[in-house]
Amino acid sequence: AYGEDEKARAFHCMLEDHLALPFATEILGVEVVVERVELTVDGRIVAVCSRAGYRQRVSILDLPFPDPAPDGVEWIEAYRRWAGGTQR
Image 1 (cartoon, helix red, strand yellow):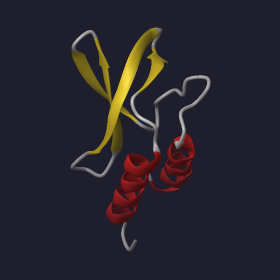
Image 2 (cartoon, helix red, strand yellow):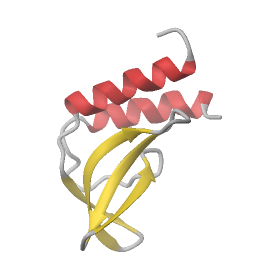
Image 3 (cartoon, helix red, strand yellow):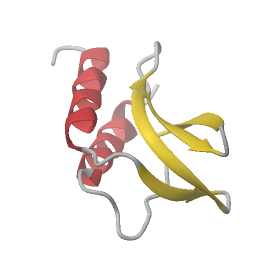
Image 4 (cartoon, one colour):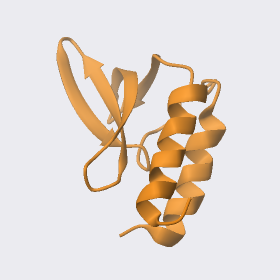
């Protein structure tokens, strides 16, 4: 990968391929289901979370993991380490 956008796309592909979806987690005390991950037009990776017919996109950097964590969560952790040094 040559640029930051290309690197983010590569992480997104790895998440799509390896993260076990859907999975439940808790955000601000409310249980939600993480349905999928998306790449935004500005190059961020977000989790599409749903509850009771509503959907909200949450930065994958802020997404809490359930216990036990789903398979593939190591790719979120790797993205977080990478983004910590390159986040815009």
